[in-house]
Each structure stands twice: as structure tokens, then as C-alpha cells.
Length: 205
Image (tube, rainbow, N blue to C red):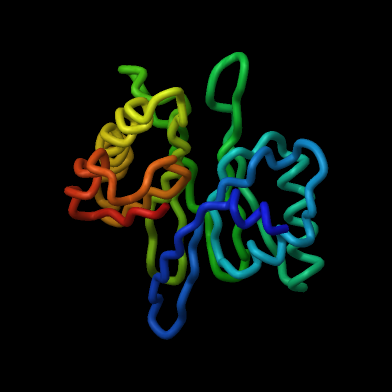
């Protein structure tokens, strides 16, 4: 279990919805659905959040097991959404996914993958629209390349502003945009300067 905490990268966003608070997170699950996993322990962590974005999801089976463990643990209903296809290349690909409490969070639409016409990303970011109370927002998930050099990670981080603009322009009336994921860089790295300059966004690592 100690190694799990080293693997899972997360940051919490507290969204005040009138008198209630929703807790949102992102995790790198390190190949969810492959090999032996302690799903009950993972569920204990995920149950602390109302909506969680997941990276390195390898198959739907892993999400089903996680959902079952969450419902067994909490006695509440949970739902998940997994991207329709993997992102990556022919040698390695992974899904993005979200899992949430059904009585608090509502998935309103899938925005799909970022259309990466310039091939800026090894794994194209993915987004969905959610609603919590009267607060609706776009939740983008990204898993930046680790690569052989730090410069490869930084190049993708510099392009996150393009991802923001792409999903913002799909729904120009939506001014609340959350970008979360595993960026393989500390948040103080200069390569995030473009995304930090965006005015209507939340940034989670």
C-alpha cells in the first residue's frame, strides 16, 4: 500500500456549491486492470472524493472492479465513464476514465479527445462536462509523456494552453475549465507558464 501512495499523484479541488462541498481529484492508477491490485484499498482512497479522474486505466474490467468495491465500501451508488478508445501508440496505449458518486455528480456530455493536429502529445488529452449542483464545468485529463529527456515533458506542458483553448471553444458559454492529470513535472516548472496565464481555468496535479 505504501507504494500505491508513491504512485498516485493527486491534487484536490474544493468546489463550493451553495452550502455543500464537492471534492475532486486526479490519480495515476498505474495500469488499472493489469496484474494484481488491491481494489479494496484503492476504493478507500477514491471514496474520499466525489469525482476522480484516472490515468493509466488499461481496460474496462479494472473500472468495473473499482466501482464494485466503492459501492461495497460506501453503500452508495457510483458511476464511471471510460474513454471510447486508448490513446498512445501501437506499442502502448491507455484509457482515461472518471468515477463519481451518482447522488452528487452528473456527467452531462463527453467532449472526446483533443484534436492534436500538430502531434504535440504522445497521449491526446480527453475531456467531459460535469455538473455538481448549479456548478457545471469541463474536466480535462492529461497524462504527459515522461520520455527520455525533461525537454519532452516540457514541450507537452507548454502545449496545454492549446488544449484549454480547444475545449473552451467547443463550448464558449462554459467558463469553468479544470485541467488535471499526471504531468510528470512539478507545478513550478516554467513550462506551465502558458497554461497558468489562462484566466478561466483550474489546474490540478
